[in-house]
Length: 107
Length: 114
Image 1: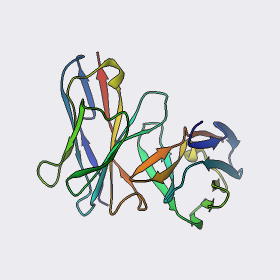
Image 2 (image 1 turned 90 degrees about the vertical axis):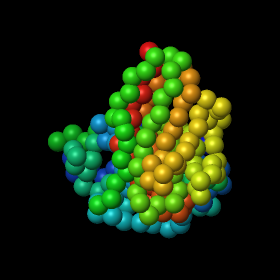
Image 3 (image 1 turned 180 degrees about the vertical axis):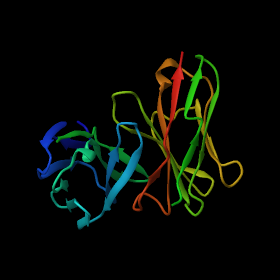
Image 4 (image 1 turned 120 degrees about the vertical axis):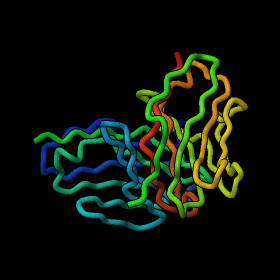
């Protein structure tokens, strides 16, 4: 069983739609990271969470430590949001990665 | 804005050869990491490095792999005798102070072993 599970694996949305990507984990964590991987391969950090909720522009990330679950929301989605979104949890001195969610936003 | 840099962007090598992948982390960061991503698969942790020592390594990081911070700015990953299955994108990352801080990733080095 994977330690970090993401859903859905693939997501296609129309421009303007509200998007939710989910992440569940089974190990004890010190922090949870949401990352964005562009089509060219580069990885950018979006959020680091240890509790509660964070917002940056149209992106919102939440975490429920008791339920071992986190969500990434994108409001008013845009084609430039098309990317792979990766959940990774801090466990010891390493990150354990989910498989990623491939998001495509159509105009 | 400061960024993590990696060289080369693409390295092609023959099986059995040694390769060194280079990274320059952000200057005030104290923790350094190497990750790899085989084409079509998820990102995998290789090793974390702090205070000139490995702080954690994965099962992938066997005796063929080593890391070094030779001069206070570069952070290198050496693969002694490359195998076909080492072909992957290798990412370096750094953070101010460990896993509970934002990680800054380099653009990656694509390693192709033939």
